[in-house]
Length: 339
Image 1: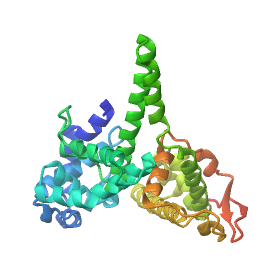
Image 2 (image 1 turned 45 degrees about the horizontal axis):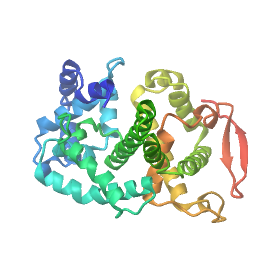
Image 3 (image 1 turned 180 degrees about the horizontal axis):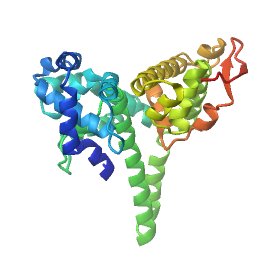
Image 4 (image 1 turned 60 degrees about the vertical axis):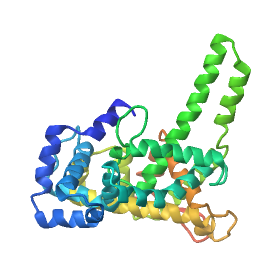
């Protein structure tokens, strides 16, 4: 994990304590968050979970102007509190939480690993890749950094986060293979064997481009069916990288309202993309010419779509027009609705 990730995980002590005080100002709301997180079933105290929420908030708002109480509360309301409560309990080593975690996520991670390696979930290679992650999640890695789950901030589902971490470990292995190849070329020993090993790792997922294309097409379709105002919001935030407060001033809305609206649109787009990928081309034009993807393949589509920003958001979120997909699958261009 790089230095920035370590900072994000640890949080600034001063700001964390300030966030903790703010989050507890409304006892009823704080108690509701604790209930939604299910901390009682894991034996976590409200104080412990409050510290966890404060740590996540400090990481989220680091380097920005201190958020208002409303914006901070709105942020917490967007978190996957149930997943965050489980991750917090697992990071603290609660046995019941770990039993639940293994029961729910081991099969899922093996399925994801199988999709990445183009093997079945029961293949030894897939099981080894997935199960190797558990030592880090439990905090038994050689670096002794504690549980990897301390880097989970609840902004996505735990499944999404775990899939991303697993994909990164897969990429790390590919890079390791490439380094072996370079070392073999430098010292002149066993270079051919090392190149074969590296090549085997590099072609582990020959269908990456196919998944990326499917994801891009699905995202374009989902965006085309959004209201023009929602597209404009996404464009301002992602393509132009404007801050929520700045967007709010332009739209005549409070920062917290913009935050809630943005989260709602993001969830709507994600659900639409998942449904399109799950149903195949039938979700777009009804011809059924392209079969749907499995959950593990959909997970890969999202992972590849997030890698190094391969998608041209400026093009997809063009301010000049909004695409509308017609029942026949053709695209109609409509003028952007003024906001």
